[in-house]
Image (cartoon, rainbow, N blue to C red; front, top):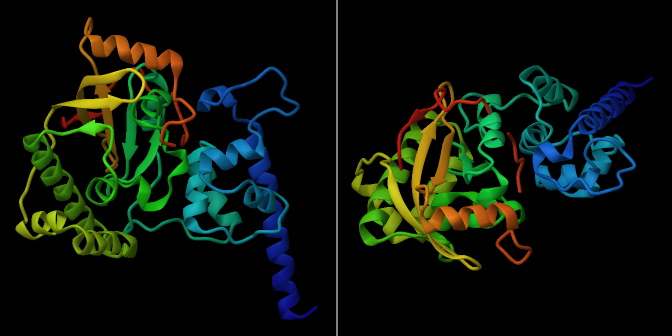
Length: 311
């Protein structure tokens, strides 16, 4: 057999093993634990292919080709999304990259890996809107109530999920800032982004994000060039919801020890109108006509593992 033939055989075997592993991991996930409707009749256990595709943000056709061994070289970004959607443990995540003949993302690039503790936090705080962002403020996970409150972002991809990109270049969001809050938020978020560029100097995507923001947004460029430094403090924000009207909520940012993930929580004081509206949204859920769910997940009973920073 030729050298190329041996290589083709190895790739085919790796693709089949990759597909078998994906089918096994998909079959052990209870749809209810990731926020998906269970329905009355399910002919298979675990996630359907289309459900895995939804959670990972890839096409159903690509999931099919991966499982059938017809696509054997998925990108690191796709593998990271699959690992997160399938709730893989660290050893399983490493095995996934090995089966795909890919190296795990290096430590000098922004990681989208969702730690088990943060995943459990999302699961257990079902009655509180929670979003999780990477070091560059790109959304990587959220729970169902956040989707109902702020709009379901499953239809968004790439920079559309980045807070700074959408804030400086996108249409108005549901969260309303007064001028003082806006200046404080922008300074704190840009401080985080600058720190990320220092921690991850080899991340070309991060450098490109900063360069494009500087080019497209004079306001971002001025704040970036001023080198102003800010920190997140507990803030009160107004969310304009299309169905239940405005909600005045407290917003906090938490950081998980051992990672640079940003965990953002929106809460309402008991007995307030906003608390009543959050309970209503928890029952009603996200409406089909709202802004476009990443893996919804359920954490450890206590927030003590996280350090409150406030936002």
